[in-house]
Image 1: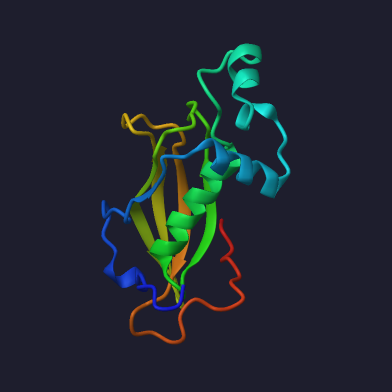
Image 2: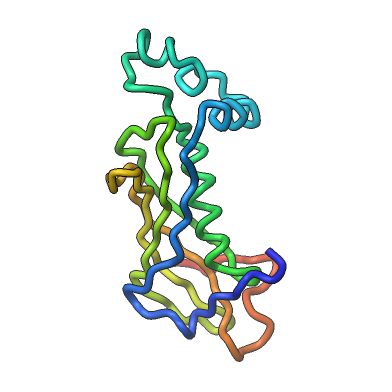
Length: 162
């Protein structure tokens, strides 16, 4: 992420959107490679006949862990090299199939200013080609101040929450 732009807590306003990350169209070889990389051998991700005939799915299923990784990738890119993704939570509510392009979006819902850094609260999700939301969620990202100190401490130690 060298040379990536830095997001600063000072600049955030509620309702601001993070840059959308688009991936796809996702192909069967992409799903097979992802399944191999994480050793998920469930055939619904790479065996179309099994997925459609046995499990009665409309097509090969995009792995939930792949959607998780794309959410994290979008948030890390937005946070910049000095930002930290503290936590993310999402639910798999709709099926995503091979051939779709997934668009990961996020929107700032609030911010909390702490002594050494700030916390950005976001809502997020994964949209398919038709604009259907499949994976709604939330995240908290630690961001540095523009002109205060060294930024988010490394290693990042989350603040104590009430």
